[in-house]
Image: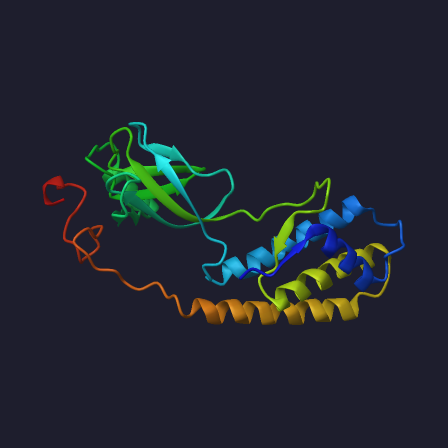
Length: 235
């Protein structure tokens, strides 16, 4: 389960660790900014390992054109599925993600549903263009939440593991002590040690969820399914 702490609790702990509890050199608002920055770094460490920890899902509904918008908070794509019967059943088909040189072959075509996609400039391009009202579910990693502005400090931050907790606190400590022109060497060493432990944990967890080659009759024309964008009859 998540290792969560309220923002106000983290502010207090970072102040205590930095020995700045009674200092007015850094305001509460700035402590929030420092924590938000360090949380973004923590988020990136976990997400870049390949671990499916911060995943989210959203349904995209087609409007008869080739594109739909990605979520505003989109950070990285995991996959895109066609929901065969809309959201009423669990049946789905994974779409193949196209490389840029493959897109021209698919462009300008329409079909009963999309079989492939590409993401560019905050838009999902669906190939062939599906009819209006179809549902596609995007599995993605969202942007990390920012905590720069907080009125109560009640927002909960998921620090993932005890090493994530140490990484955030020592990382904020480095920033705070640097502003106070205080020696940051110990804090930097502790931060980097925690970063390595967090990354190792996330990487080892990611090893148990490898991306294997999936072969099915719905495959996207790369050798196993046998269909191609120029022949819709074999769909």
